[in-house]
Image (cartoon, rainbow, N blue to C red; front, side, top):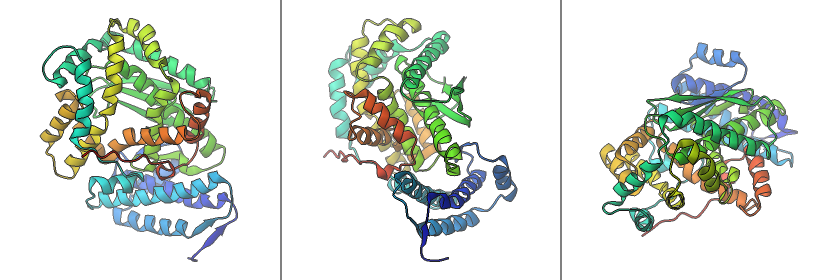
Length: 425
């Protein structure tokens, strides 16, 4: 192997890209959660099943592949090709880290987040969350512990099971209509909606290729009215379904970039995917649009009294600030500083989760570990990146344009502007 290979064009990355896809499929034989989506040549998947290569063998091949791509120099000014080279390099590096984990290597929460997702999560102490909880205390009716008062108030806004499908279908239709006005999607784009139980997550998008998805909603626990728009936008429009559709149509099909025919779940791609899916809620419903839509359309459809809707939205915004408590629970739990029970108690105290939801969240951490950073840190990184390019709430058209460009590009988390860590004392 030579020390440097100069690329005349990005097309010479295609060999690396195919090897990367085959590597991901090989890892998927050992880790059933790793391949989140695949719509490439069926024989590549069959080859991986037949070979069933060992983890040490996959590690060796991945390291060779990383050395090969590092030796390349992209001799083009086209930003997308440069981003592609960086993307493949970091995805391969992340794959090696996942293989090392499967091979028994122990990572700390911080080491794992950086190795897998190309990002360093900020640290928040309990006092940061207590400041927000103090603000909530003045908004919540009743007396007593804040967590209990929040749960009592929140329970007034549960969607009745018999009306769940109608509410979700309406939310998805609205999100789809708004998204299609701003993003050019294939005419055949579609999804199926299923309600499932016994899952560690609240919703999931299974992208099937050809602009189709299966969206699953977990009904283990009661679902609140705000989750209809959250999940419709996050899992569907303009979230995961749109993200995967654009990567398939714009990069995998039109440009022949086969690395986008596979989605490795535990990789930097997920921070972009989850971050844009969460920020997409704000994109599709800017400003007060969301509160107005839910109040006038979803509340009546669910049969929920809208009398205290104003207070509900004020509380909902503050609860969002507590989301980083999930990361701190994962940090303490995965680093061995918190037991399972202590991690659940942390979430009850600092995220105001019910005991049942806290237990579900720790089950999620058991299954997906440091993946939790992709939702909140990803959203913050994406928001800052887009707003720095003029995509603010005051300029919704520009926001849509910057959002569309991001979700149809191979940009990495490290290519986004990192917000300052907020470390309380």
